[in-house]
Structure formats: C-alpha cells, structure tokens
Amino acid sequence: MSIQEILNTTKHRFGEIPADGWKFYQEWNNAIFLHYEVDLNELKKFVPKELEIDLFDGKPWISIVAFTMEKIRYKYLPSFPPISDFDEINIRTYIKSNNKTGVYFLSIEGGKKLSCKVAKGISELPYRFSEIIRTDRKYLSSNSEFNDKLDIEFRIGRELAKKTALDKWLTERYALFQDTDDSINEFEIHHLEWQINELDLERLEINYPRFKRMINNQPNKVHYSAGVKVIAWGKTKKNKADYSTVLK
Image (cartoon, rainbow, N blue to C red; front, side):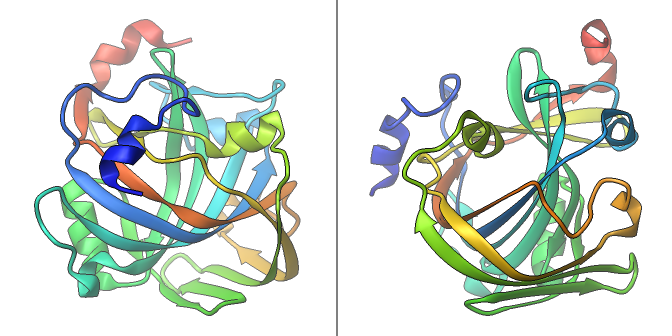
C-alpha cells in the first residue's frame, strides 16, 4: 500500500491526522507486545506531572514492545540501512494530554550505537544502546550499565479474529509525549490498524531493576504483529509551564 493510501485510511484511529505535511517514514516490524497492569502510585514515579496517566477500567498499564525498526528516513530521502535498520525495545505507558491519548516512554533501547545516537539527536527521545540479538523465535537484549535483560523465546499463533476493547486501547495510539528538562515534546504519527496475532511464550526472563515493582515474568496480556508502516510528523515543543492548567 502506498503512503498516500495509508494517509487516506483513517476510520480506525482516534482523532484526525495533522493538517500539515508529514516528515518521516519508518516501519515497525515483527513486534512482540508484553502488557502489564500496574499500580498507579508506582507508575506515577516515572511519569512527568504535566501528563495524565490514561486508565482502562480504572487501571493503568505499561507495555514492553520489542520489534525491528526499518527504513526510517526523511520524507524526501532514501533510508540508509546501516543506521535506519535496528532492533528496538521500548517500555511505554499510556497517557492523555489536552484530550489526546498517546504513549510515554519509560525506556528506549536500540541495538546499534550509531542509530541510537542519531535517533536521540533528531528526536530528543531517550535512546540508549543495548546488545540485542533476535531470530525468528528469539529476542535477547542485555545492558550492563543498567543491568537490564530481556530474554524471550516465542511461537507466533493465529491472527485474532476479533479484538477486544483492551486490545485496541493498548495498540491504537497515534501520539507520543516525551519530556526534556524544560519541555514536553509531542509527536504525531499515523499507520494502518495493527494486525494482531496470538503469541505463545515458551521462555520469558525479564530484569529491569528500575521497574521491578511493575514488571515481572508474567504479563497480563501478550500480542504479536508482523508490523506497520508509519508516517510521522515533526515534534512540537511546549514549555512545561504551559501545562500548569491541566494538572490534576
């Protein structure tokens, strides 16, 4: 499907796509989702006070998403695989800001040092390098600085015949909010609806010491997806002081 066809397909998303022109293209492929229902007070320690934590049936969630980033590029330039293609793990939660739902990253890891440096420089997202190895049925990451480890062996199951409301709530997000020292950066994205498969975990070992009170080896829900083609707009910076009126 062409980029224009993707842009024209919007019935599945919440809210309109931005009116101004998009700036980046990327693909998020072969994605593993591990979803955890967590304690709200514990999660608040990691989310800036300017952002409201989104809840599903009164409960907050975080997700580990392990995938392969591919073909990331500026609108009018080709991708450069030595930088544009790399494995990535993000740990995200779900937030609301000015009546818009999105995600907030608690952690982002990339499998190439140069890719992390470039991505962090362009986006200001908190990329850091981790050793990542993946095969068709395994995903292994380690980071000696933080003592982080993710070790997954899995089997891809059948495609979901029908998604639940929670399935859609966890996956259909079209904005990202991330903080810096003095601002909240907002990113708008668009893609087709995630096609989701069941996922059988044959082995799962997780160690993220910073999040040990929220993450254990038994996620509440898991998903797999072959991936999506993503169109992204440039970041919008807002001073943190401008969020004072929306604080709870």
